[in-house]
Length: 227
Image 1 (spheres, one colour):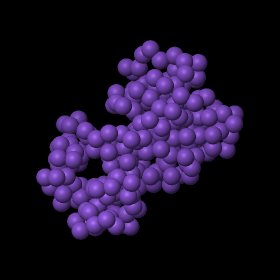
Image 2 (spheres, one colour):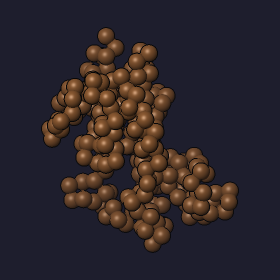
Image 3 (tube, one colour):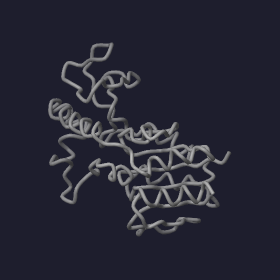
Image 4 (cartoon, rainbow, N blue to C red):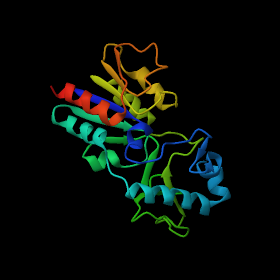
């Protein structure tokens, strides 16, 4: 069974109503990134950081997968599909994809502040001050913040190097380290980029660009691959 590796970014979730990472003003839900998405911010104002992610989690519970998520799940009928996502939502899993590697963490999970191995599912949408791990430390959002290491980048690179077909959906290929994953994909492997702009990408061998939004473009591409 051929291996399809898929790299997804904010563009695939945008059509489900998940707000994309930053707006044109560089703000994230009206907050400066430095105030809600760094370890310094966490040390300065835990209440603000917890509330920020609680609101994003609450929003996620109101969203559903879109045609692109469902199409990728459908692809598992014929291929060994591995998704590498930069998104912290669980829309791929909701749509039925069975192998999803999260580069930047997961919104519906929390982890210990003293032991990174202790990761818990959050019941409901709220993570509160005083919610502690079994070792007695405050739980934090299970999110990779700016300036923190991306532990899953190594397994993601290994998966990328074994792809028979490589798809890139809803990401600008400007955000590192994720954008560097294409460097691990063998030159002879067919690559597809689904992006309504589809510009600014050069020097990538065997690349086909589909200038559509994720929902339409991925549905078209999956239909082609299943045929």
